[in-house]
Image (cartoon, rainbow, N blue to C red; front, top):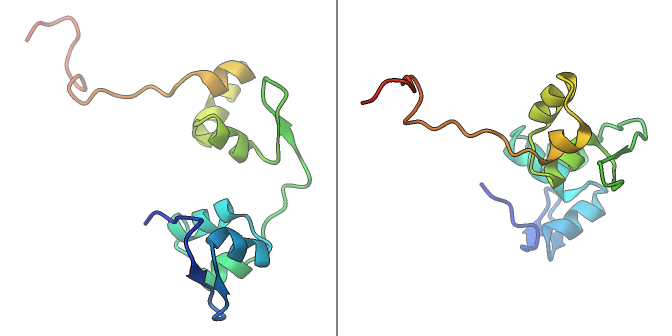
Length: 120
């Protein structure tokens, strides 16, 4: 289910909001956190809105252009790179820039299991 953050909504307490963004602001939670909790962690709306947000200890991170992010996850999301892929690349000696800007490899379903040196 795709959540549209500008759609009108009602929270678990019956409060009416003109958008999910405003509802999240009321509950002091980022819309991205709310969406992830609903779609990925399958929380109820009440859990998604009221569960305390984990602090990252105030750590900030910066990309290779010097742009500040409040988490590695938000930086990876900005660059459209999965966080696990980013961490794998960094742990294998890739530079920050290369880790963030190299698109992920896409496996071609037709070539899986086929030898490249044999004609069909």
